[in-house]
Structures are given as structure tokens and as C-alpha cells.
Length: 270
Ligand SMILES: O=C(O)CCC(=O)C(=O)O
Image (cartoon, rainbow, N blue to C red; front, top):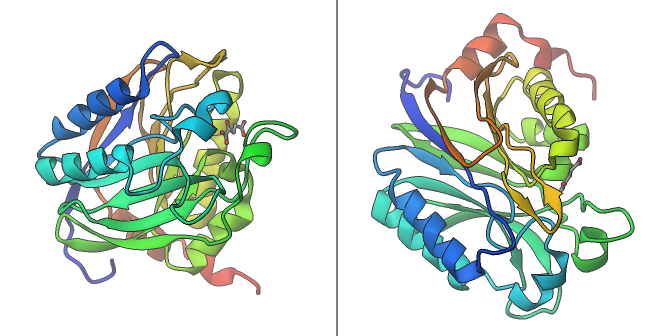
């Protein structure tokens, strides 16, 4: 972003709440309409597995879909209709040519085209859930996004990844200035969520867009508290623990300023 004029970016984090009673197709329609309502924003972010359910392990096999499936198709249409760049959160992906399942995040441009995907690397659940059902991703993902007239290098991470700082340092080596962190992070450990999101912002001097889930599904209550954290680790905006659109207009050039005034990243040892 160096050398670009200051540009304010209108950011909306959609902290989706859901429970077990809402069928998948109805939730996809509801959330796609919520995305459409964000017309006028530059960037819209959804949480991890908002459609398939972060802890709804029993239905993942049945409901998994390829990236050409109904959930991502609905999001592509909504992004095009609203003319926004959309981080669509993640879906349970079953690629057309494989029986493996992945927790895959997808970024979509204003024309409805997929510009980046990221398969979650660190699977959560210890002896159950993701490590049992999903294949781990093995590629870090950065993508340059055209936001408010400037090219912004962003990095992608999902939920439990937050506990593994080496991934974020790698994303920083790859140029990341803005981190997308999408999650279905439970209320029981929301204190960890807050402190670790701020830590990742401070140690990498990046803006963190942390979009969590709300509501209770599969017996697990989600933590909410989506946050926009600046490159000095200050929480600029924070949601509560119910469904909410967390909005903020932010000059992403603050990352260059933070790095120039306190150039700690230049002191890294390899
Ligand atoms: O690390 C945690 O406490 C929560 C992680 C999680 O819920 C997930 O990755 O789905």
C-alpha cells in the first residue's frame, strides 16, 4: 500500500447468529440477503462455517459441497448485486474430484468471481470433530484486494489457526497488511480470542478483521465479540454476543504509519 493516497475503507463484519432449528437453505438465503443489504460498503466479512455450522459435525458429510455448490454460488451473486468485496467465511468443501472434506474460506470480488481460497490448516477438536472428519490445508493464502482505490495485501486464517503464531509470521513475510480471521469461537474461551487477536495485530503490525459467530448450535454457545483491531493492537470496534453488523470506516494506510514509526519487523532474525 506504500505510496498510495489515504483512502477510507468501509468495512462490515457480519457476526451471524444461528441455531440448529434453521435449515441450511434458509440460512444461506437469509445471509445472502444480509450481504446484499451492505451495498455501499467496500468490504464485507462473514464468519467461519456460518452455513454448515462450526460444531455441527454430524451433518458435515451430508451437507458438504464443492465451491461450485449452492452456498458459494449464492454468495457470488450477493457480492455482485451489492458490488462489494466479500470474504464469505468458510464452508465444508468436498471437491468434485475427491472424497476429502476441507474447511475452506473463500474471497469473492465485486464481479462475483472467486479471487482466493484457503483450506484451514489447524483442525480443532483434538480426538473428535475436524481432525477426524477433515483434511488439513497445506497452503498459506495471501491475496491483494482492490479496496477503495488501493491495492491491499491481505492474509487468510480460520479460527483455531489463531493459536499458532508461526502461520501469521509467514503471512507477514508474504506481505500481509490486513488479516482476515474468521471463526466459530466458543463463548467459553472468548478471553483467549480477544487477547490473541490483539497479539497477532501487535506482533505483525497488521489490521486484524476478526469475524466470529453468535448463537448456540450443536450444544455450543458461540462467543461473538467480533473485532476490528488496528496495527498497534488497539480494538477500534467490537461487537457484543448476538447477531450484529459491526461497521467501521478505516484508513488502511495506518499500517504503513505504524511500521514506519516503530520498525520492529526490520529486526527479525532468520
Ligand atoms: O481454539 C479455540 O478455543 C476454538 C477453536 C475453534 O472453535 C475452531 O477452530 O473451530
